[in-house]
Image (cartoon, rainbow, N blue to C red; front, side, top):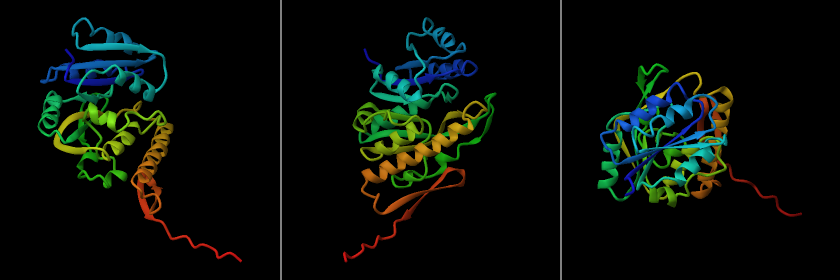
Length: 260
């Protein structure tokens, strides 16, 4: 029998954190789940650590892939999911024990909602909480999502809504989740659960300077595509300012030259 929830975790060289991430998934108060761990060709012990959980818990499924990047890994992992609901758990982060129970309840009781997301806490590399996540403190609004990625973590998505939105776009090597959330907001209702049920780990290896520039570039591309889909591209143009802040400025009307 297929599980109700499929949790997807992609892994690349996270041997220090992956065990804790897996254990946080298996410790959920909601047990009707599968955890699909897709290793993206790790060169450390990440794959072996993940595989050590298979015999202990049949809900764990581990796939060993060639290094192809997170986008392709996510697509491959999603293709193997069986759940009615799907969610992502990053291999260096943690789920609170009631994360799936609380979010699944919202989807169970609100059939018009295709995605529910929660608040999150920031932790350091040692797992110490350093403060509440700032993104989720912005109230959800479909239009404001064009500027602020408030639907950050944790997200549980109805699989039918995921398919309706088009799934994961192969074009994006970064800002994959932002692009997906923008498209989801255009096809389904999104609900914010104001409880901190995810622990986002901030550590030196989590994002390099080059990664940050790539994240900004593809976030801008996700916004641009959303403006086109929503028929707003002729009204607004995107400006990026310091700290990756995005702004929409009204386009000035173009003056057409009269033919001579």
